[in-house]
Length: 107
Image 1 (spheres, helix red, strand yellow):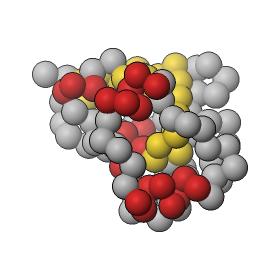
Image 2 (cartoon, rainbow, N blue to C red):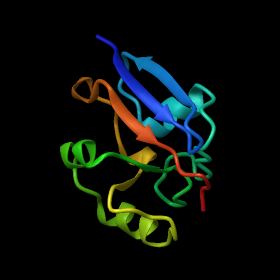
Image 3 (cartoon, rainbow, N blue to C red):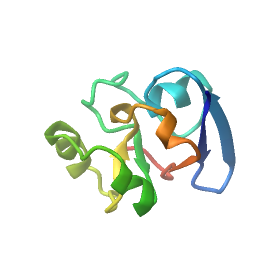
Image 4 (cartoon, rainbow, N blue to C red):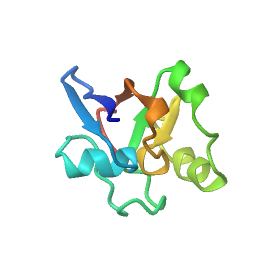
């Protein structure tokens, strides 16, 4: 069964993707040309350029941030209470219809 993911750019443009394979939100975005995810480190959780925001609903449903993810996000001046790194979130069937908000800039 496919999982639907909505990526919403800062300006409001919405991209709808479906995947049946287990992949990270970062890899899904990069493989499908979604703008706004730089992923300079390639998904190693060492740069923070795949910063995203989630609604509180989705933020609460996911695994908590790792110490490394917290460290990377702590350097981002535009971090919010529901910020995450897309490379650290693996798309699963239970995440069907997740909405991923892309920031205006990556740092």
